[in-house]
Picture (cartoon, helix red, strand yellow):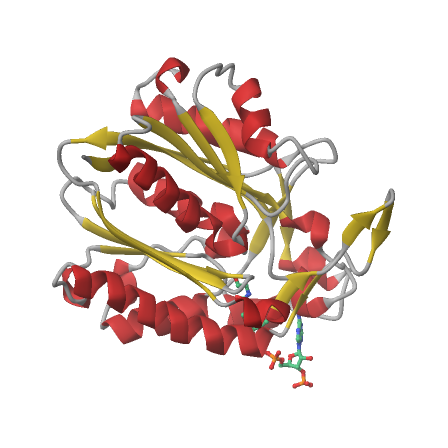
Length: 318
Ligand code: UT7
């Protein structure tokens, strides 16, 4: 039994925050942000808009693209680091908002690698026969975890959601998936706060050693993409589209270079939404599917790295 993506969808909140807007908030410039990250603007969720609300919009679009009704969904996995509340899970809230009554629903927390972790988990459920049609969602409102006085982080992140419908299939589909983690690197990128006895303990904002993250990301992404390619006796030249986690254009360029891929084979959407964490890969994937770049029969490679540290890759035949 194989698992195949049969529909994609995405959603960005209405409010746009440009680099020029940020120039008025912190000591930064549009040129610095573009040259260091490739980001031009990001979207910010409305006061009353939660991760599940973004997820609902992206999911409806994915279901519509797949041409299936909610009655067929028997598994929902939501990757998020910014759940609506402590519990129940955002996946259960999404299930209710979509009017789905059947199947399992749970969240996965692997920060920016969350979608890759969720997709691999859903694939295993389908391959084992425990589920037939899964809704796999990445949704994050990281703007809520930003310290708007820290120019080293607040210029990089934004809010959004992306979703795919993954269904059992006689033909692949997902060819290989690899996940990794190294918890000893957990303080390089973190939001350390927690709730105790009704009060916030510690720093709830994102802290990051940007330079260390950059170096680590380039190294592990190159390793994991080689790992999935080798498993399929493929090389960089066999890849039609690389759809990387949209954190920073320079990390994407470095990974493409190591694979020997030119940038016109890389789907890049970071300019218009910044780093949306778990949402970034399904957002980029949906863009390239809807604009016709990704075509049936092509080899598509997804990869991500994020807090934990976590990283992974999924190789697909579209
Ligand atoms: O999913 C993973 C998420 N995280 C990432 O992908 C982040 C990975 N890291 C990066 O993308 C880069 O390290 C950054 C974009 C965060 C920073 O770029 P950099 O080229 O590593 O810059 P830097 O940290 O070495 O800083 C260079 C200078 C410093 O000034 P001095 O010390 O040279 O005078 C910073 O203080 O740039 C300064 N700087 C800024 N200037 C204007 C730092 N942030 C800003 C800013 N605007 N927003």
